[in-house]
Amino acid sequence: MNLHKPKFWDFKKPNFLAYLLLPLTLLMKGNVLFSNLYPKKKFKKIKSICVGNIYLGGTGKTPTTLKLYELLKNTNYNVVNAKKYYFDQKDEYILLKNKSKIISLKNRDEIIKHAIEKNYELIIFDDGLQEKKVDYDLKFVCFDSKNWIGNGLLIPSGPLREEINSLRKYDGVFLKVTNANIDLNKIKLVIKDINPKIEVFDTYVEIKNIKRLSLSNKYLIFSGIGNSRSFKEILENNNFNIIDEKIFADHYDYKNQDIQKILEIAKHKDLKILTTEKDYIKIPDDLKSEINFVEIDLRIPKKDKLIKFIKSKIDERN
Image: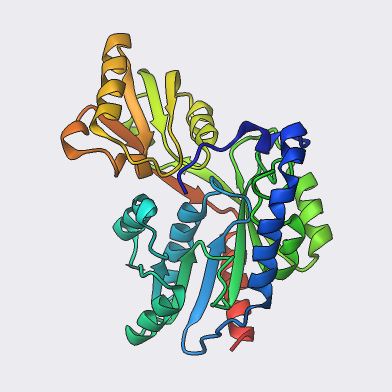
């Protein structure tokens, strides 16, 4: 879904437009109800994890999926990542392919069957909590702590795919932290009030290639991701001097003229250009020489507890 997220989605309280769109949220409620009633397949020959969201876009699903792959691969699981094929999400597929083993097909049940044929023991899905056919062994929900649940309403009145009470049916939460001023305890109290048994793990975004990027430069940054504000905030937290910014829709398919315009602006203002790794993948090769990207990694302070939690949940569901 290529879109510019409406600003009113992240207001602390719904505005008039959000209330005006409320009748249309019945479509989302119906979809969730149907998903819950639809009989789902359980696969006994392989264990499955889903890293998804109920807040649309920008919650860190893909970096979290890659981090889980890295952690669990080192525990001797024969693990593979997976993503349902979407034509407009090739950027995420390429990123996953560059950093892990991955299976991508048009149906998630077919992905699992293929993984079983290849003798994988554990499969980690990037996205798919709202899947109607597959029952995963372990389900994680990702949130950005700054956006949290926005105005708290369902699409199109707000940013939610499901109401916040849906946390009752999930096992864990990954809470991405990019701002030290956020009251994490307040968010965690809400989560635990809904589901006392759910585990919450903080994740911190770090710039992996920061030593190859000069902090003395002035930058023009651009991105077409679910949460461009988060990208800028990460750079500012690491003392990058950002002079100009261009924001595109999520999963934006860059044309030559888009990049040429960015190059012209940067040259005119004497700025270096910086983007996300996911955006860099989509830039035509002949236009990449003047553009650099930020490679991010996630730090999970309680990673040992996370691994133990995952193993215990997988084992108890044998």
